[in-house]
Amino acid sequence: MAPTTHQQAVAQVLAVQQVAVSRLEIVQIWPSALPFYAYGEQAMPYQARITVYLVSGRRESGVLTCLDAPHDCMMTIPGLDLFGQRIPDVVADVQWYTLVVHWLKQFFV
Image 1 (spheres, helix red, strand yellow):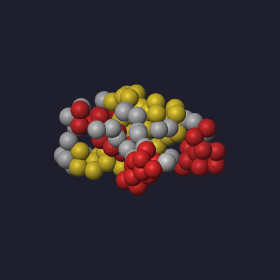
Image 2 (tube, one colour):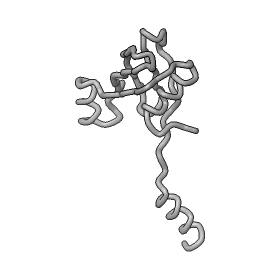
Image 3 (tube, helix red, strand yellow):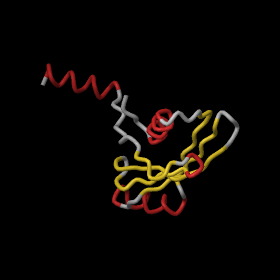
């Protein structure tokens, strides 16, 4: 299933790498967030901090970098030996009402 958030995309990669995660946090890095919110997706690259809480109790930190959010993203978590690891592209979460409107337009417009 395609991820709808960066958190889901990172979690998928960690699962494939067989990393036992108890919690995962992704938070925007302040200097990177300012241009992103001021100018939108044209202000790239986008960066966020990743914190991985392992089942063992250890905590590892890294960074998520997107050259064209929500596409072309990679993560680096040195403590897990992940450097420039690509993550799946994030896809839009299609809401149920969008599907209903699309379906109605096919039959009634």
